[in-house]
Length: 344
Image 1 (cartoon, rainbow, N blue to C red):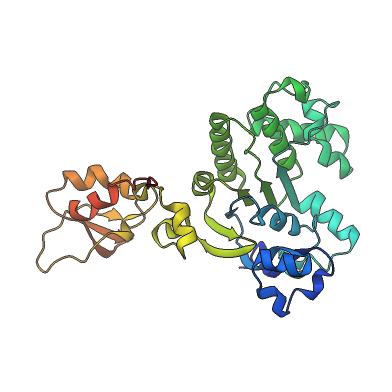
Image 2: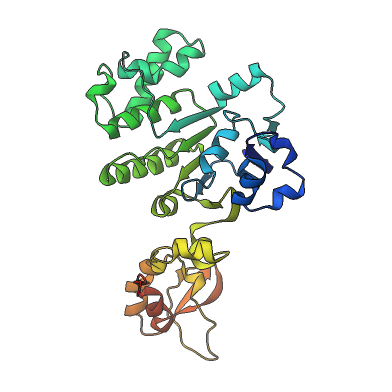
């Protein structure tokens, strides 16, 4: 299956003569030294990844890690210095200006932290704006915009102005506007970071619900690990523009690639993320087991009642194939929360 997005050896270097950095010994310099010697900043450094159709792919990292630059390179809102980007198999860097406009209008939509709503237009016309740019007639674009407002739970707000809505409602309008053109891909650049925590949680749930309903391919940028773990099918961790690890939430928590990732996930309750495959064991010879098995992809915490009630170890299976067994001796250590280290 062709990836929806394919990125290969992508570089974005800001500064004088950025082309001289890529492919030269300068490319191996730490970020600070490169800047001191050349005046250039390597915001994205030799990044490669694929995003599969229908996947929620999260890019996370601290401020300055290059994640927002990366997502803007995907549609050339920022022009890459080097590397390849394909969307549905079509090379983005080879697109002329007309084809690039078509890509941004029809196939890929972006949702930003700052909603960018037009203050002089009603909510309905804000949602319909992308369709208007496409030349869709007024009646049809209002019909489609109304459907999208219903999808994001804003029925009855069609004729209000943006400043009459709360921050969370404005972000829903932005989400409806992005969905209205029926793009194949949605790019989210820290869209909820300015919202209050409770509203932010509601919007995360909304994105999950909408993804389940409409099945778009999502690339989601965040600096928040909890948000990444909540939303991502897979997560890419960036540090100083470099890709440190790409994996499922379970892989990041269970097998961090290095100390940087391990530090990121150290306070994540492992039992809320890891599944039974991480802690199951081989059955002993002649050991009695329960009749009703548990699936290998059961989250550890969800298995607690079943395992603790069982008189014997519980089989762990993948379909009809037995992989191992689980009992309290494996379960309980995984339930012990990691405590925060307190500086001496």
